[in-house]
Image (cartoon, rainbow, N blue to C red; front, side, top):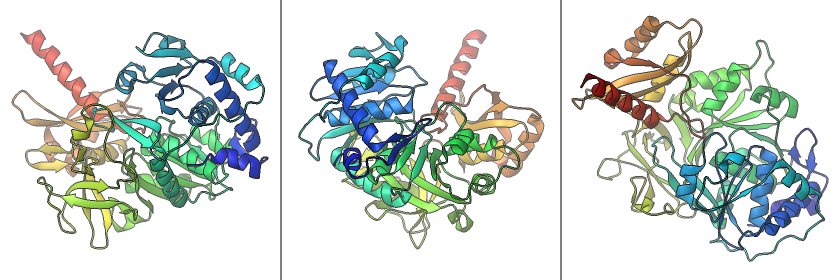
Length: 486
């Protein structure tokens, strides 16, 4: 795939590539990437291989990953808010670059500290020629760690050819152009945080790299016309919009990283922007569907029609395709995007079988091909034969006064019976009796529901609830209680 930042630096050098306190033109961005590449080369990085990095500021992230790409090195972004050890053990990079002093000695691999002063010196350096390497379609350009909500980390390797395919899709579904001003809230370690800026720069648009203000303040200051974020991030944004704030009618909001329910979509259109889109996809397969939120008027669990290059089937437990309307497990296939996991043993996992990717969702196809998602296979609570989608319980619980956040899940007791739990963050006006009454009226099978107060609901990089972590916490607490009794 061609280096489009270098291309636009020649075609429209004064066009804005990065929107910040001081906007950065394509010519300036292109030159800065080359300077950082030259400085990295001076650190003795290998000519080929994988470089992992952990950076806090998005401008630094973009400079590092673009410089590594020009040097012919694959990159992997690590999350800022969690220690890097587990992902480093999984990725086994050739070099680990970090802006955090506490990371030194955290990895078995070579670790290089990149301070703010290092960046400042790199950008003061003389102009450097673009590092040349022979780019091939099969070259590895990016490695993502995809754990979803299963607690089982998996390595997704993105080649240059796969990135090109993803880029073409994202340009179309996003409607990106040279007039795009994109704000993407998730970090570069999430697939959306990596591919959306890439697609924007491929057409000569601009990406915002705001400071540390809250999302809504950043929107008002940087004036994006495209906003990409997860459902959890959208909920946090809506909670911080001042009362009476006017709608931003020229802002397209694309929501991903979890099922969008009607109340959230309606609140977004009422408080933020009338132009709301739902993106259903994954790190592995990319965009699967992309549709205006109006699809929820037709079906409250609809996520749209499948992208034309992707094959989809709804299958029973034996892998036999089901007819339209019947609920089963979703499986997807697009060899040009994804053909199995990297690392040892992952290709035989439950998520990749027989050339099909199984995202872990229960779904059905309407007669016209509309995909309807009914929950996660690994998360659905089976209570005495009654199946309940915990994400739906989350939504109802959070609509109750005094519930700041909530996450439903189930755990087997000592007798092997699945019992429902609800972890919640309590706020002003919380009333446990009222909450239980609301939930039991909607789902009588929740009559044995247990509530657990928690400071923060654990979420991954896409703000999806990590229900497996909550289950593990309950199991550990139960073990402790049993030890105390014995």
